Image 1 (tube, rainbow, N blue to C red):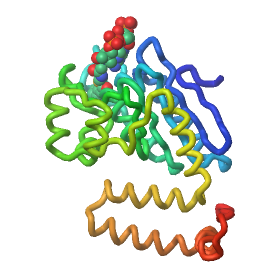
Image 2 (tube, protein in one colour; image 1 turned 90 degrees about the horizontal axis):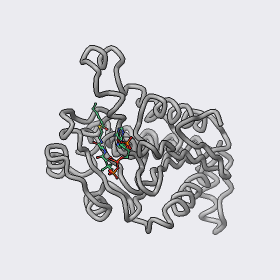
Image 3 (cartoon, rainbow, N blue to C red; image 1 turned 135 degrees about the vertical axis):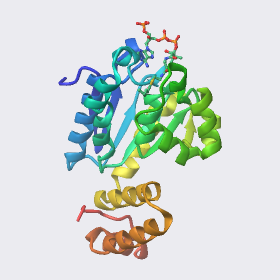
Amino acid sequence: TEYDNIILERRGRVGLITLNRPEALNALNLGMLQDVVAAATALDRDPEIGAIVVTGSARAFAAGADIKEMATKSFVEMYLADWFAGWDRFTAVRTPVVAAVAGHALGGGCELAMMCDFILAADTAKFGQPEIKLGVIPGIGGSQRLTRAVGKAKAMEMLLTGRTIDAVEAERAGLVSRIIPADDLLDEAMATAATIAGMSLPVAMMAKEVVNAAYETLLEGGIRFERRVFHSTFATADQKEGMNAFIEKRPPAFTNR
Ligand code: HXC
């Protein structure tokens, strides 16, 4: 394929991005960043795609940013390159993105999972921000997104000690939506994504946008933003179809208009 570090597949209306650098436990180097962003952007532009799944291997979703690539860099090199800023283009994707996480999701791997819209965790998943053990801190949004996901106490402990949490603790803390037996993870993630892809794409994008507003804005502004976007769903044909189908006790036939 055109990608060296990932495998990109289209299965029906679901795009599947599989991180594929097994020799480095899917560590996120520049090539991986470019491939993930290019694939996600291409899927986002594809009108046939209604949801995206990002996954890794059974052993590792991703074991972090690539330590070997960064180790010798200076402050000025990191600053001038604006290291990791390219990942902002991943969060600009408007199509819903599900992370299917098995094994290690550490450092940048945990951050990539949190950049997805929600995380489905295998019972083997392990999440952590161990950067402090390397003498750095998270650099792809981990301190912000983890704190919002699990609250200050657990985020602070994880960032300050580097302690990793398992799937059960991650679910209890609200970091992941569900735990799935590892053997079933990908099937369940694809089925979940297919459910999303069966919804009206513009309305799914609006739902994603308003939940993200809860992250990105203060509550008052977020509630006002949500109400305005809610009003605008009434400008779609799919709102009329969805509500009429309910009243008529039949499945809806969405047309993305
Ligand atoms: C580069 C990595 C890597 C990483 C693993 N590898 N993680 N290479 N960057 N983040 C490589 C190893 O060097 C090794 O290559 C191969 O992958 C297999 O890893 P092992 O350590 O042999 O596997 P195992 O013993 O099973 O241990 C798994 C592990 C451990 C617990 C996940 O690899 C680990 O602790 N990795 C680092 C986790 C981490 O600190 N992540 C945060 C990175 S910093 P060789 O060639 O030796 O076989 C970050 C954000 C930084 O993400 C932000 C601020 C700049």
